[in-house]
Amino acid sequence: MIENRPIVSIVSHIVLIIGVLIVGFPVWITFVAASHDALRMTQAPIPLWPGPYFFDNLKDALFVGLGGSGSQSAGLMLFNSFVMAMVIALGKISVSLLSAFAIVYFKFPFRMGFFWMIFLTLMLPVEVRILPTFEVVANLGMLNSFSGLTLPLIASATATFMFRQTFLTVPDELLEAARIDGAGPMRFFFDILLPMSRTNIAALFVILFIYGWNQYLWPLLITTDQSMVTIVMGIKEMLEAGESLQQWNRIMMTTLLAMLPPVLVVVGMQKLFVKGLTETEK
Amino acid sequence: MAQVSIVDVKKSYGSIEVLHGIDVEIAHGEFIVIVGPSGCGKSTLLRMVAGLESVTSGEISIGERVVNDVEPKDRDIAMVFQNYALYPHMSVYNNMAYGLKLMKLSKEEINTRVDKAAELLQLEDFLQRRPRELSGGQRQRVAMGRAIVRDPAVFLFDEPLSNLDAKLRNQMRIEIRKLQRDLDVTAIYVTHDQVEAMTMADRIVVLNDGYVEQIGTPSEIYHTPESVFVASFMGAPPMNLVSGNANGKGKFTIEGLGDIDIPKDYSFTGKALFGIRPESVEIFSKQSKGSYPLELELVEELGAGRILHTRLGNETFTVHMPHTDELPTNGLFVKFPENAIHLFDPKSGKRL
Image (tube, rainbow over all chains, first blue to last red; front, side):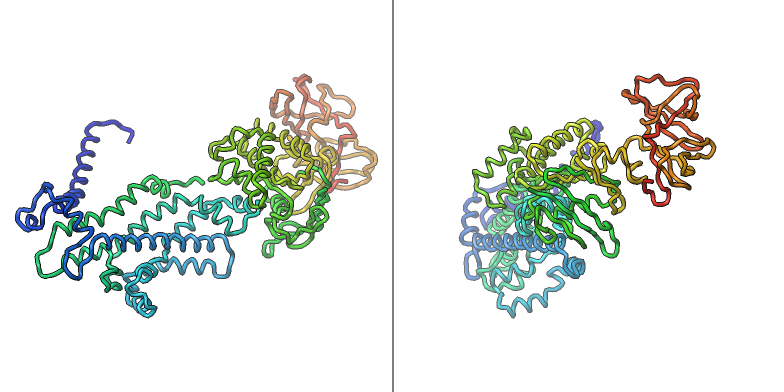
């Protein structure tokens, strides 16, 4: 804002600070809980300040998990989640890039028909088609595998649409100049389109990585093998594990660990992310 | 040697024909300007030579080779686009080198060629910059450089100067012309700007509505326009065209004014258009034999001269006067030198 009125900026800062506190409090509690021992977490009132056991809990959560049969260490779950999120994000990006490339730059029969078919799948997220998808994945023998975890989630109408819009802003002369320079379609794609869409790809990667990381229902459905558990569903299983009391310290530590990769991705790619969503000049 | 010949070339989009049989023969080393109003098909014709548009019928050959079905990269051409079409994510060097890399030339060869072009275009200091860090004129040069390094037989220009300001345009006009002459390549240059056409061309092709109106040297185009369209399109201000009747015996009757003497060799009788360039008329302040009164409406001062907007009888009439001549204050009379008079058929628009 251009005006400079102290009251306005004070009020807006207060509102923002309140917002930050509301969002930040649960995270703080998670952090506090992750730094006490199991016993302290079962006593009321729950602590509001960190305790001394943070690194013990970190070690236990990463390498042991809850202990006992049928529980996994956070290390393995993090690995599973990471592979799943990466494959989903990169897979979605490559498939969408290629399909957008085909739709924008090639003339073939029913081109727009295909585009709208892809677009229609926006209305069919995993949750809607979960039974048939499960059937297909089960019949292909992909239960309890990374391919089963990721493949059904890879096709993406949103990303295809976004890349289509990006490609449409690339001036035709660029394609023509490349043709005169002797670049075939795939060369044009890799040498010119891809680098020009760099920021869009980065922005999309952030969104899709988090989308993949946060998958809950689908992994829950198709992984029965404990070695394939992802961290988001793992946390929920930790809550139900055994008859004993919940070990809040380790559960919260695992939660903290689960939050870390998406946060790192967002923070690390923040600049590219904003550029990719706002930059229009080609 | 790279002559270009365009023989009976037609182009249709669906059922709409946009080029109706174009014939142009271009000699090696010639600078050809294709000029015409927007939508006349001039860019389409150029893009067909480049291989970016298919040829509906007819034949285009470069050198001795028919290139109708040859890929653009194999046609031995280079093209400079109106908006430059530089690759935004590549440095100036890579923009120029990209085509050479795809030709699989050796690193040293690429280096020498790019350096040579950069030197020629005074781009040495900018080789590592991105196009967006350059000014319009520099981008224009990079686009030229990209064309030069390919060492083509034919240069194609698609309105390359229209995004530059007037001063830079004049300068680039001369540079392009010089460059083309030094490199001894054939050039086809498309523009809608008749000044560019007049100043740069060895020969001009005037295109209108998908038809060739006239092909000729700038002087031919200017002094003996073959049609009303050429007469009014080339030259600023355009040629005066006054309708009237020719009697076939050296008289041309303009309604409300009287008879004008025209050369005796015009045998045409009937309705015709009388044309004369604004700078070809003679201006007097006193009535004399063979002069006609003009009614002054507006004077435009140009510095090097002035343009008088007047009425001749019922028709508008422009006169271009050199600044050395005094502007007559009381009374304005005009004489039409016989050798500057053109007659056109108003129906076909052709020269008589």
